[in-house]
Image (cartoon, rainbow, N blue to C red):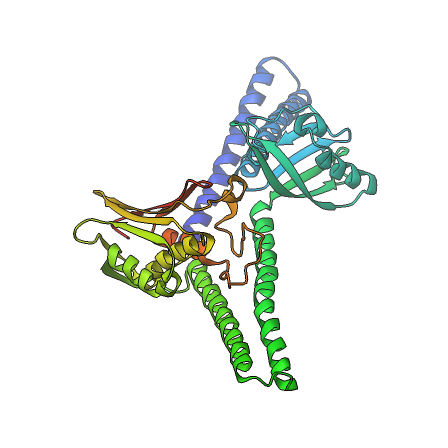
Length: 412
């Protein structure tokens, strides 16, 4: 039914245009006859008049198509530029300015003048010289309004304009910064995970070969070897468990198991778990929570890991006596503020931006004690973010290091 109506409407439109054209032709003939022109002259004038109408219509249509084309190019996520054979900009969509943090891009200027980077102009030059499509990945540093330098990665595709068009080239730019960083994170993760797993496996295999050789006869020495193997075996299990935990948090493959609990009880359970590390140490623990313990609603499994990792991190990195660890909680109308601080050696300023990265180790020394998986703080951050919260780290080496966690009470 709809197709029939559309067809009828189209036929009526054609008839109306045809009738209107006939009306103009008749009017023109009447005017030319009244002016005393002959019939063939009137027809010639009529044809000329019709030609002018068609030419104007063609120009209007071309202008309409040009504006439509530009509007569409301004909406796509890729930057698009058309240049002449001297690389002067003839057209540039709005996205190009956004990609390079420019308020405006001026037509008539060359690519090198406008973007101040030879990588862009060299790509177009290569396409023009080879007369074929050229693709390159480039890295550019752009200065933001605040003065900060932002490093971005771009994929540039350039090709000459079609032979029927005037000389020049088109250029398309894709921002691949996120993909590049994700790929680098994946490579770093695989390399670091392989290293962290290889170390304990190498030790275990070494002790196995030693025991199999029969060199060690003393029973006490055999037990020491088995203890070391057990310790490193547990380390492998811990690494794998932490890798699975952070994978679940990042991929959202498992929903949070929300349940009510108190933050103080969660901290106390973490301290009970870490009691072997506290034995014989001159460490003071200070807990400050509301009288009701600080009610929260969240996934208790992950919050146990948050407090365990933060407390364990403070204990491992500060073996010297006199360590004071403070854990406090403040409750407000819409959120709670959890703080874990210590007066230990602290974290250097240049390490602060990286401490939440997977497998990052700020201290390069190698302790005979097993230092952990390097995933603890990554799990902490991912857990907090999964509950809709934020975590901040401040550190003054030798004075105080503080982790502050803000969590909305609605999803805490």
